[in-house]
Image (tube, rainbow, N blue to C red; front, side):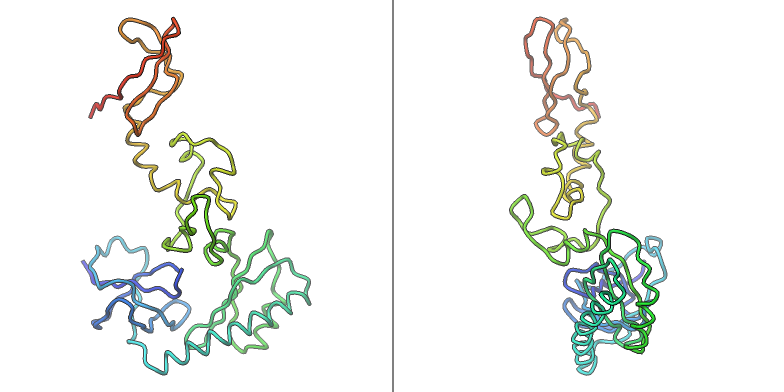
Length: 263
C-alpha cells in the first residue's frame, strides 16, 4: 500500500493520483506537480489516502511543492495568455481554412508547452498551423482533438432530467456506455430519450446497469413459454425492480408472478 493524493487541474477535470512526497497536503490546497507535459499547477481534491500499488496503470508522479505566491501569479498569467493564444489560433485557422473549432488552451506552469484542444468532425492536417503557432509563442505546441462529450462537459447545460449535466458537475472521466444498457433497463430506444445534449448515449445509463443485470438473473425473458398452475402461457412483461413479471395464459388470462431469488 502506498500514499496517494488526488489532484485536478481545473474545476471540471479528471482527478489524478500523485505521490504526496511526504508533504502535508489537505483538500483545496494548490500545489505544483510533475507531469509528462512538465510542471503543472493543480488543486488537491480530498485527503491523502492509501491504495494498492498494483492498481496503478502507470508510474506515480510526485507533488513537487505546495504552490507559492509566485506560482499562483504565474498560473494566473498563463491563464490570461492562453486566452489570447486562443484568439490568435482562431485567426490562423481562418487563414489556413481548417475545419476545426478551438475550445480551450493551456500552458504548463513552466510554459514549456502550450496545448490547444479542438473539435472537428474529421481528421485535420494542422502541421502548418502548429509550425506557425510555435514560431509565435516560442514553445512546444500540441493540438489535441477532443469529442463532443468533452465539449458538453466544458460548456455545461441542463439535461432531460432537469438537472445540470453530470459530466459538468461531478464526473471526472467518461465511462463506456452501450445501447445494451438501455435495453437492460427496458428503456425505449428513442434517441430523444437515451441521448444526451452531446448526441451520445446518456452517461447515467451506466449508473444502475449492474443493479438491473443482477435483478434480471432470475427473471424470465419476454416471449418465454412457461407453465403456471398447469396452464401454458407466455411471458409478456417483466418489471425487474418491482420483482414481478406477467404471463398471458392460452385462455387470455393475465397472471402476475413474483421473480424468485434463486441465489
